[in-house]
Length: 180
Image (tube, rainbow, N blue to C red; front, side, top):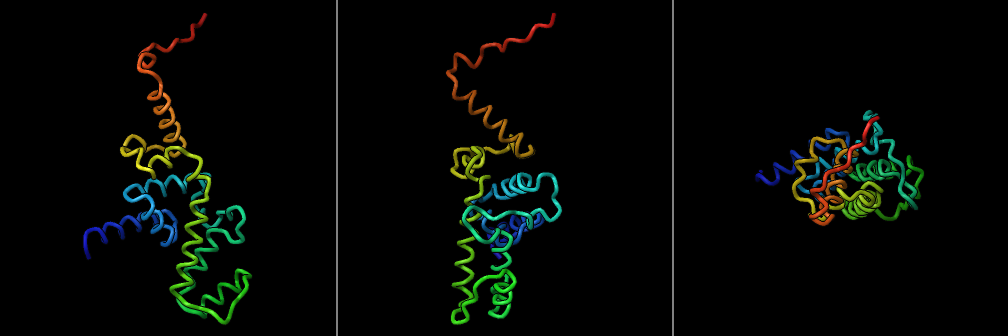
């Protein structure tokens, strides 16, 4: 096994240890590279609301979708054989097309749907720190790694605001409240 393959396997395992299914861990790794674990940790924190026990199964469906992300992953994981795939479709109360089943094509279609629903999540669309990490605008994440997500987002926004001010205003003293 080459180093890159070993590294990806290890980083995926860390994400799986957070409670993610393997397919989601792989998608995080593909999308965020070396920052995948940090983003996955923040995503879990954002969605678990402090309850990390079975948090993944409680994710709700995205807008306009009939299946939740956990249901899509369940369906994806069942594609190993036609029999288990049909059973999963029946369990999820889906239409079963008995004339067509191709494992690779079906897995790829479900993977695309998982990716789409995951990318539609508000977590990836509304927060500048996530968008800037993904785009490569924010390269040095070290100041944020040990912070909880909300703290990291606040600190990052604060730094952006300060850096966007003209240099002359940056060094002005902040007026202190006087107590009487």
